[in-house]
Amino acid sequence: MTESSSEHGVEAAPPGRPLTPAEQLALLEGSHAKLAAVRTRAHRRLAWFATVLGLLIGAAHVVPSVFRPDESLPAFLTAMGVYVVAVLVVTVWYLRTRTATTLGGGRRYLLGLAITMVLYAGALTLLGRETWPVALVVGLVIAAPLVIAGWWRRA
Amino acid sequence: MSTHPRLGLNDHFTNPVRLSLMAALAGVDEIDFKSLREALDISDSALSKHSGSLEQAGYVTIRKGFVGKRPRTWLSISADGKAAFTAHVASLRELTAGL
Image (tube, rainbow over all chains, first blue to last red; front, top):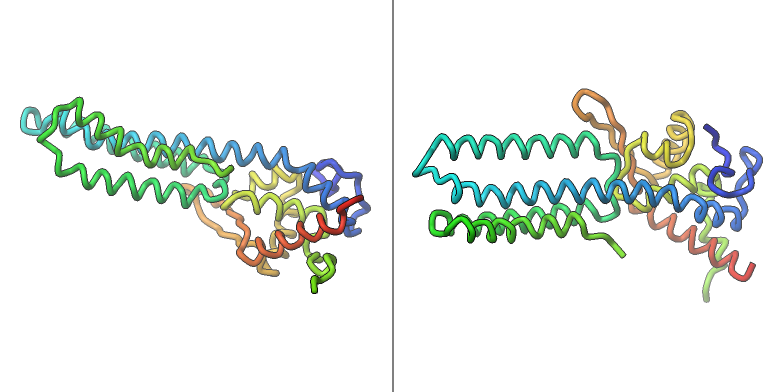
């Protein structure tokens, strides 16, 4: 462990001496690779979290069509119970393992989540009037904004 | 009339650790203390000292929270910090152009 700049690709400057402009630029370029690795890891983690959460929200629309409560209430309640546990597990996993949020990642995630929730609320009017394959397609459409927001990356 | 690029340089960022710290924070919304320490290859105390100085200057925001029962510290760049760092890097490029 050291505060020297040599680890970032610049000749070590004596401690306390301010870096020259050229040394500062070299330091910024030298540290780029390590920071890029941190950002890539953070991006992937958010992307997978958004994907799983988006698909789970989409699944919340599909479950009542596959496990119809009017046909078998226990099956429906079991499926919804599994669904709630899955949402909790994936959320806790992300919160525990998150080490960074990429630039704009938080805002994109919230926007994607908001659109997904609006689509979910809108699709509630279809419940009970659609077959399960149609419900599956609608579920994927509901999940899409959050999944796309998760994987979207600034150029 | 344009000003000399040296006027855009910020004394807070001429220290290599603070410069690296600002560069790291400029690329993320927020990062936890441990990951930042590993990315910068510095000790806990060095990161605490330099991030504290930058927080006092208004360039860095430090947020303390918990994950379960474990305390975790998050760092992010402030709007002022972003503007100052962008101006600093632009001045560096201008000063060293043609070298």
